[in-house]
Length: 248
Image (cartoon, rainbow, N blue to C red; front, side, top):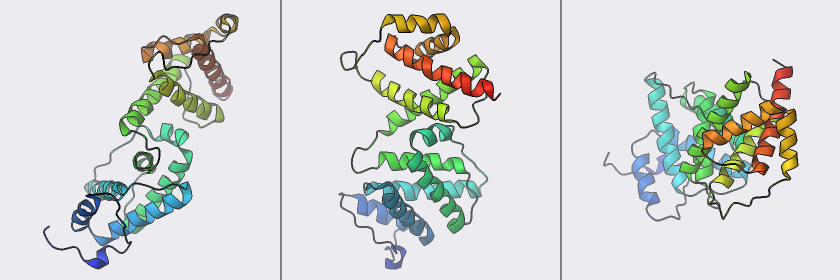
């Protein structure tokens, strides 16, 4: 534990710019096998190249610690599931593609069989460690969890099987993400563009199921949705109904 760090354990040269990170990384490297540092270095280099953005230095520490613990738990037969996999896959498709590549690398280099859903955790590390425009991890977890619950609500209320991917489902998930971000603003900060009430009335008359589903989403969120928000939610729900009722 207290031994000095061997130079050959830092095969990938980590250039630390942030105060205190080098010490944390050095202490961590001293406790893990060298192959873990190689895997983390490969993942970060590949991610920066594919995603075209830089990460904070702290990602080296957090990702190395996460992967070490992940593999340790896997070898003990402990599998932790991430229910946000499909939502994050739709919200961050490019990051998810890199994260799935990372899972394959972990399995190959560390001789384990980690499940693909672990990629969701790696995506979380990516999007919260961007050097520019990082995303607060609390917001990501909260919003993604809410999206998961809303999809469950839509599925159960309308008797749909949403296990199959579709463009309608992707678009609905993305719309929910932006809706949650907009609702997080205070009432004065929200840019409300109310549509004509006549349009919403037509939805209520011609597509009561989609409208009721949109109202249920508002009830779940504990928010009084504007006619604009209800209108577009109803449209997205209708697309889901058309897609999944036809193929059920």
